[in-house]
Amino acid sequence: MQEDQGDVVGTLLTIGDEILLGDIVNGNSQFIAATLRGHGFRLHSVLTIGDDEDGIVAALSEAIEKCRFLIVTGGLGPTDDDRTAPAVSRAFGLPLRPDPVYMAFLQERVQARGGVWREEIGRMAMLPEGGVKLGQGMAGFALVHRDIPCYFLPGVPYEMRELMTELVVPDLAARYPSRKVYRKQILRIQGLPESLLNQLLKDLTPEDLGAQVGYLPQVVENWITLFAGAETPQELDAILDRAEQIVIERIGREHVLGANDDEAARVIGGLLRRRGWTLAVAESCTGGLLARRITAISGASDYFDRGFITYSNQAKVDLLQVPAPLIEAHGAVSEPVARAMTEGALRQARAQAALAITGIAGPTGGAPEKPVGTVFIGCGVEGRVTVERYQFSGDREMIQERSAHAALIQLWRALSRD
Image (cartoon, rainbow, N blue to C red; front, side, top):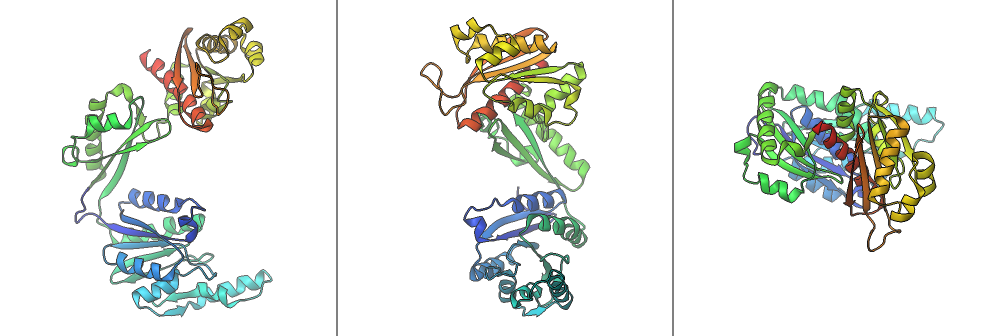
């Protein structure tokens, strides 16, 4: 999507060797980008710089040339590797000056804690000339350079979030009252690979849709994203509604679980609640993960009755009344056993719907006829039981996640047909 005069586009710099070395996840970037988008601002670029003053100076000098606002996180502490303020001084030609109010605050805090004042602590109160302190009990300042508002925030996530929400966004909104409204719509797609989705939609241009199409593969499903901007929320609603309908017509409504927060457990919960039905689950290789997914949704007690964790063969016999000869004849990971587990869950819970999972999550336990990733999932709806065999790839955790999700989708399809 090309920028126009209604776009208010900025640049984000995140600073810290710990990010470049992979010691921490750069969640600050995600939060800042999403927060800005939700208030009508966009980012032109996100760049991570190590704790190198020359590198920070170069990045600041370049960024200020092509943005309408600048946000920087990290490098504001008292240690030798906190070099953001000196770098700003050099890049923007602004001498460092002590902020007397913040200096006094730091001195009082050290004294109150029985500590010893060190010169290094005082560095946090040295701000580029014209800089205005943001917050008090944390590092952070703002300044306007060449008519561009610049915000320098701490790298500590909870401190950064507080300053972004309470100070940065309101200040940006006041400076740029006329701006577009942006929103990203997510369509949760089931049963279609990313390559096929691209094939089905590749000829749809942003001009055709009024929105930009993106693809976000997830572990258990694929997301199609629709991103658009408009002058008013009403106009944006109309653009995204039209784009969504065009995309759904191309890929088939039967593959669309829902949009945005419509995760599988939430959707099937709504379907069960509307029917007044209860659900029981029986799990072997997922060890309770399916029940966890279901009960993670607030209000799940309206429809979720119970879960059976039948990891051993004896547990399947004792709790679900799966016949022992059936297990001996076909193995615990088999279509007949998955069916018997489903029937047992329906019977024992007196529920209208049930799911059962039995499989080999690995990395051990596989065989040529049943390799690691072999999973059988039973789905029972009002006494009718169907079983599907799956062959999942990935490590143990991924196989378990994919198994739990596949079970939910199996039930979603069954409930959607009724």
